[in-house]
Structures are given as structure tokens and as C-alpha cells.
Length: 93
Image 1 (cartoon, helix red, strand yellow):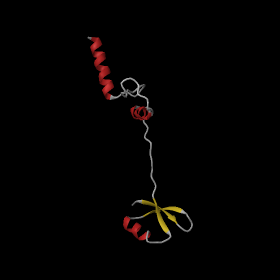
Image 2: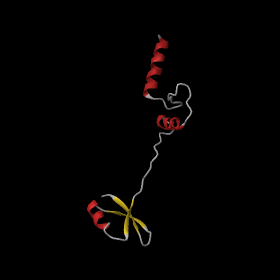
Image 3: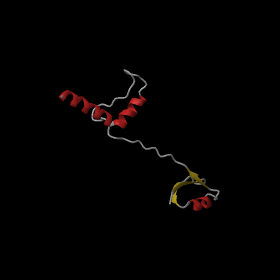
Image 4: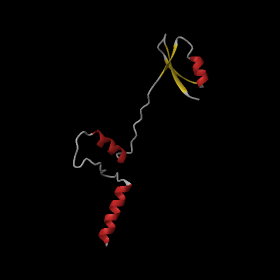
């Protein structure tokens, strides 16, 4: 069952309760109770991998070179890996 957050309008106390949607509808009929809506924001991280690098690149308003995104350091995409393998194989021939 979902967890809902409420505020008592008289005491300003916030608290959580687990209940079904039908129970929620009945509970909200009390005049001194209001539901509190919260937004949970999570930041993903891949330890400075391709996602983090892209996020930082997208925040930068400066355009360098042709403006394309290129990973650096340990964050190499599958496409980059394939291109590097092609170059290595070409140089061996």
C-alpha cells in the first residue's frame, strides 16, 4: 500500500500513514487534515562515467570545436571502443 504524508492544520504537524486509496479518500474528509505533496529528486551518478560527463557537458554554455560530445578518461562508449578497435586492427595490417 502507498505511503501518504499529511499535515494537521491546527498543530502544523506532518506525519506519514500507509493506507489504500479508498482509505485516503475517507481520511481526507476530516477538515483539520490536508495531504502534503512532496517531490523526490534523485541524482543519478555513474562515478564520472559517460552519463555524468554528458550532464556536465550539457550544462556548459560554451561551444568548443564542432560542439560534439566526446567522453574522456575511463568513460568510453561502446561506439568509441569499436572505433578504437578498428584503428588498432587497421594499424596491425
